[in-house]
Length: 461
Length: 155
Image 1: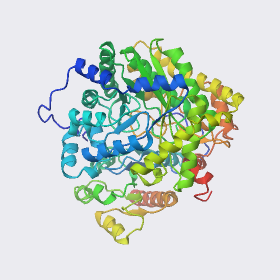
Image 2 (image 1 turned 180 degrees about the vertical axis):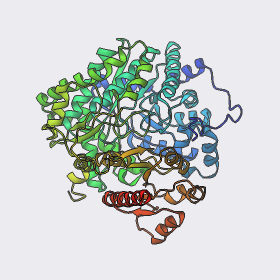
Image 3 (image 1 turned 30 degrees about the vertical axis):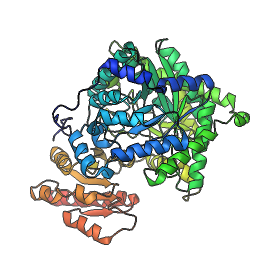
């Protein structure tokens, strides 16, 4: 079997247009009259108003510019997105370029490398909000070069979070080494006067992600990035749907940053609106979107990445995307100060969560070579993610929802959690009294994946 | 080593090996992982090749693991036919001699065309499942047949 991880990687097709110098890139970002993503995040924390960002990416250049301008004028988001197509994510640049020329609508995102940094800069210059690149690439080195030259001021991903949910066969050691280069280049830019935001993708597979796994991986990637000189990090967390648990997870992020990261690194909590199976009916989807935006507000998120009422159908059109952002922005209203959260429940969740994250990250970050310790930990299951697409994580962990909808570990695999924490999770699920039937559990996980369809009675129990 | 399962399901066929995977163009990991958990709970030894598995990789796993009871292939993205078009050649070359079971969402579109299932059968798929709950009884039946043929060989 061919296990060459570069089998889909196209050979270089000759020199593209030369990249601008670092000095020119820094000059462009600092003088174009709009804030950087980092400026937006800092302002958002200062004003305690959650910044709003859509997901968006189409294959054609003109179509992409039109879409960005429509979103920019339609909802005035604080940050805009270029979502990159999956061929580019896998470094199949020639394939992406061919489709961009012949059938751009067949691409599921914007092929930035194929279009080149000058077109990328045209997009950045066409809107009033700063631009983040979102993708899913285990080896993003060329994409990063093009993104920076284009004038994007935030770049999402990490060596763990952009490998395990997306790739079957890329060794973690390889993706971690690639991302280390990206982080080192981010450090170089910072020294040259431009602080890029690096967002870490705590959403992972987006299905019943246990909060302590999301945050532990975020903290590990953040520590690796900070060690390379990155000065601005966004830790994202996916809305699970249980208010106290989600608020606790967002509030844990600054606490963990103080514990594990250098004091001169800025860390921003980010919420991704629910990433799992979305209700199909518009009214239900909009309730879930608004609930997510309120969660971001109550958790003190610096930024919210939005969904749309068309989520269940596929990639949304521009108007649905605008409607989703405008709805989310309503939750920022000063009129909603009366909405509060049960502090005692949040505190209880937060205490347990911080202890769990400590148990997960301490062995790795305490190691002499943390990157190597990450690879070893995923091999022996002391780090793990549920539903891993990659063979470099074991996927032994199985999450379920308790009666209140909180996400708990039914099976914690080899995670080094305290016996008390494991007992709390299992008793919350009614599994305290010893072994369970795996067949029953698989049915239960399936049910819980469709939680919001059941809640809104879109499907029978 | 995988951790010791903390579940109660009695192994029904402790030694039967199942090769499991998702078709070549399909990256849907969640159902695949759940089926692997479920089959292990039923006592099967599961070699889970995971998402994006080409026919050649299924064939290699069967070659490397003698006595595979069945190959269970999932496809959720509607591209099962394109993804399995190497199956006749593989079987003609002597690969994948065990039963091949295919389940999931087997063609594009919400209205299913019975012709699509015939085309998949003509590729050499032995069992087409529309419901996941049909998998366990089918595997039990295949295990019974395999045991019977082993008995016949020893007589």
